[in-house]
Image (cartoon, rainbow, N blue to C red; front, side):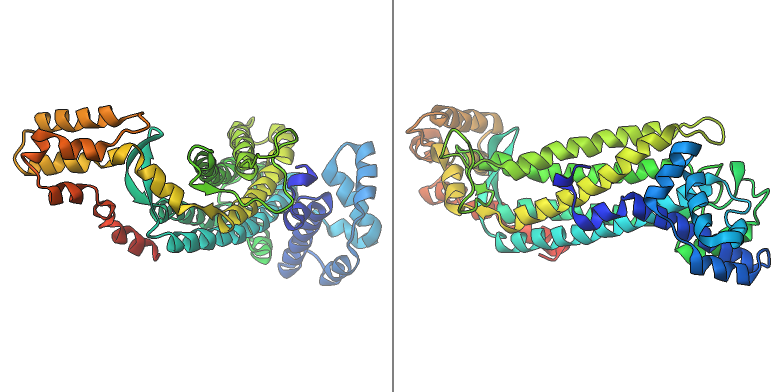
Length: 431
């Protein structure tokens, strides 16, 4: 991923240097397991642990000659270790190191993502508490519907990110899997106990039935869950973009003192962070398709997945991590305009209260079809007119006034009726 969208702590995990560190961790863990089971002299393992090292640049130099990254790595490590190096990689195949090391990278990356996600959860929870009673219009199809609160809208976001957290916690267990089973995964040249011991040392579980590689359904699940999380972030970003439109302006991204929105138009305050997040979600979602394509490999192994994963795994992790930081800052600093919410809610004389008028007329004995005709007529007369006033039209309609008193009509336009059961949702989420 380009530097612009790479936070240092996540970027470090996907460097060549970090990757080679995980490879060395795997090789040493296997050597230790072999020594515990008596396959390798302990003194040789001690020497390996004391001397083993690598130079990323040297590994690349060797790879340019041998055209094999793991062989290049092992060759370089043996340049440091010397004779004891003959005990390194005994009975292993390259994928034992590649896939087990990759699992370590993915777990650490997921831990960073979960930390950022927790920050987002707290930011949304705080804003939902702050705006628990901030009344606004709810919309369906982009059209005014009935009153809600901004806190209620945020409660929906909170519930969604909590589900994302649960999925990622489950995913961490699914991806924390290693394999030390040799060529085609049959353990022909490596004792299964070595795998068990080595994986335990690495904080992983042995794959229950690998081929020469760990099956890529796990990795596809990983990227799909990141895509789902970033899709949630996109949903929040799109909502902010819509509510920031000039003709709505109920919320707005924070605009710093020296910030400029347009090179041509000095008045512009654009939702650039939300738009950036929307675009980034498309990348991660596209990567999920590539991850699914990686599941079908030839027989026990091919390397068609390898080139894909070199791109999609770092990019997906780095982007998701960056997006979480961005959306958290956006939510924390979001500008909320309750007066504009109130203004929009009462446009055309409160047409959004039409259902309440309808139901009240029905409750008082009017035929539903007749009630709908009368209320819709008032609403359509008020609709899209500068001086349109649904409430006045209802109050002056003889059919309505013959059925409802002035106090009953007023009660139809009380937004608190629509909020009376929201405490149930807030309590479920601890808001």
